[in-house]
Image (tube, rainbow, N blue to C red; front, side, top):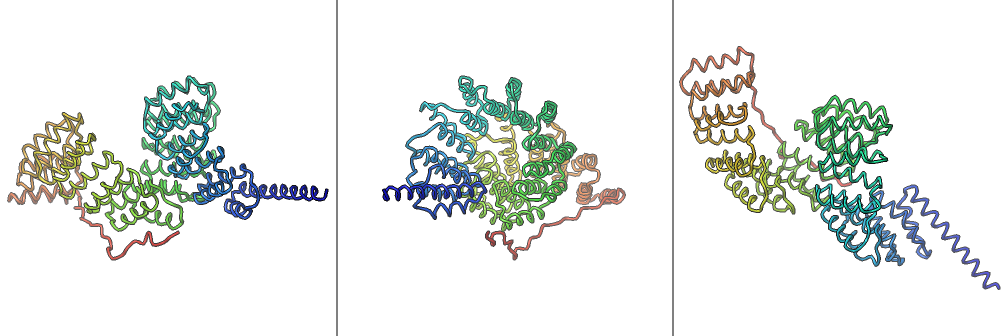
Length: 612
């Protein structure tokens, strides 16, 4: 009897201890104290744990993107024999996907003894959220072939993947599957369909689906408002926002983000100001995403000062707002010092950096030709993300090319896993600007050979390269090929390159004829090229014609008067030269002094010397 009583008492004691232990862990998780929860978990190895205890810990790791702690929980699960638990394995897939480790997420999925629709969806969502849209679509096909029926979240994730790669046909096929399923009237799925059509540019289809909805939430409204904003249809975007308010639906931070995108795309500064007032009125001014959108909108409308004021009034600075302001500085091109100071502050505060801010900083380094800082940003990019994306690769090519490091430019190009037309064009531009015309042409031919279609900017870079290296015949062939073979209408910049191409070779009559035969209005750049060539080759009559046009287009530009005076002086027409220079004095013009950007090469900028 005593033995039975002793066993019962011990069992009761263990149950009580286990209950207290689990309550303590759950309480710590509830308050976000992850490390303390893990310490308690490791301190009680003898307690038989309930599998459900791991769920809140893993969720906390997912929410805080705690990579190290999540892996420790995974190891703890394996040690305690929970390697085959369906729910926890699915949770681990979500954890690895949310922290960007898609490889380990897939490994978890492949090793699962059994899988549910939630497991498949977690993997599809993981691929989609991490930019592996094609893999997400392939995985969905495998799931479909395996006979697993999708749920509403599966459809939402796979539609997001279709949106990312603008795969309209595949999205319509998935829409067909949705129509046949029981999720056709599900609001989450319908919102995803509206978002898919709107972001793929099919606004009529998106609006049709939206109008058919019996119930609409803020997500549906945001999908249409955002779709119009993305397509540059600012008036339609604002119209939908007013309609949303009239129907009593309160906007959220995504609504304001879409509206501000519509303003910035059309440079509607007054509208941005009005929306800013509305944001303050509704109490969204403390929201990080809204502030980031405001900073971005003001900067894109040309008011970097207003963008800075929004940033300065923020109580807590975050990565989104810092990135938006640095990107604005980089776009404006005249705030390099402010951008550098802000970036150093970010780095010292341990705020972290993302690809967007690193690309912006590389653009700034390119504009100020700061090779030393550019190399440090490159090192930081490799440290944060060794397999950087195409945008980062393009920014590196541009930075090294503008800094005159052609070998490093070529290395950055060669190291890219995926190259787009911008990558090839950037390297062609680098070769052209540094006098490697033949290499630029070889690269251009190679680009066409692999089946990549050049755009108007590519042709502009090729024509520039031909112009600066005397490849007149090849330049003329490329110009004609652009029009006849690729159906690209020349812009004024293309004509400027062609005029410069002829003018540098002394073919002034051909250059003059091209100006009169082209289908765009001649601008100052075109006449400036002819004026400069007239001075080099001593053509007084053509120089006078070009100068007259320039005086009409740029009456306050003293340089044109100085060049014409130089042409007269070369021809011995001293009285005409004196009269032309006298015009500068009579009209109160001053010759702009030349200037150079000087950087102290003996002083390094110690960006990466501090570690956090």
